[in-house]
Amino acid sequence: MPALNAAELLNEQDLQRVREAVRQAELHTSGELRVHLDDAIAEHVLDHAAFVFEELGMFRTRERNGVLIYVSVADRRMAVIGDAGINAVVPPGFWDGVLNELRSAFGAGRYADGLCAAVQAVGAKLAAHFPPRADDRNELLNDVSIG
Image (cartoon, rainbow, N blue to C red; front, side, top):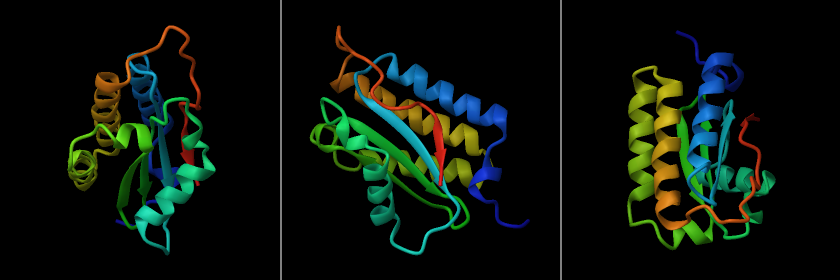
């Protein structure tokens, strides 16, 4: 089977499922979630994910609680990047646990399921530490960005 590129990984129905998972997760938190897919990258996955985090303006949340779920599709490299606020409260190894579940789902070809499960896990952690505020607003797009 040839390697998929980012635009082919999810069909429109799957993209809508992931968008809805993000929307649902954000109903219970002031935190912000994004999912970003790239075709392939040359640099280290964490370095590139941090670059995308900056490019998407994820550091601009009021409570510094943005989280990016990043996937380089062709080479199946993944990262979860959290801003300072959420990183200060998640237990050691939490992001690795999210990544392990995501990798397992991707290995089984369940791309949308894996992304939705990752969004739900991150959303639950955000909700536990950053409940919605009375003046909460959606600070970042809920769309899946494709680079």
